[in-house]
Image (cartoon, rainbow, N blue to C red; front, side):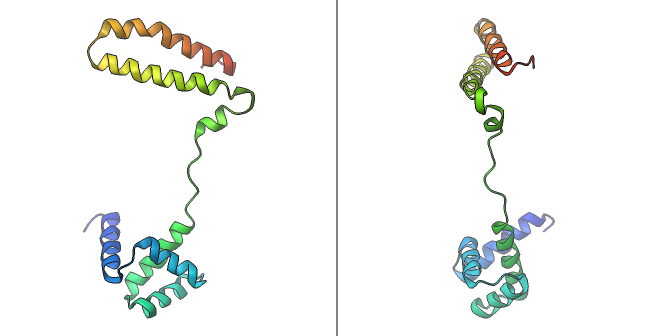
Length: 136
């Protein structure tokens, strides 16, 4: 198998089938053990579940990666539209909706209606630029 992520996914599926536990359950089991070193976790998995070295090592490493994964991504709009600029977020969302509608009209082939929407789109762009005190 030439794709490492596909090989890992296959290995995880095989481990889940062998143990009857999902990767999340295995990670929770490791966390509950209180063991912090991968080598200790690997030995624990080998003893308690009868996993081989490679499978136990993979589970321990994947559990460690999952535990250290960054928190949910922060919406970049939160930083842009904070404080006094928070009311501009409504304009932004309206602009996105207007742009989505314009693209739909354009995709349908109705060029005249798409052209008629352009002034409204330009007004929304100018309103946001004015509120942010920038021209772009």
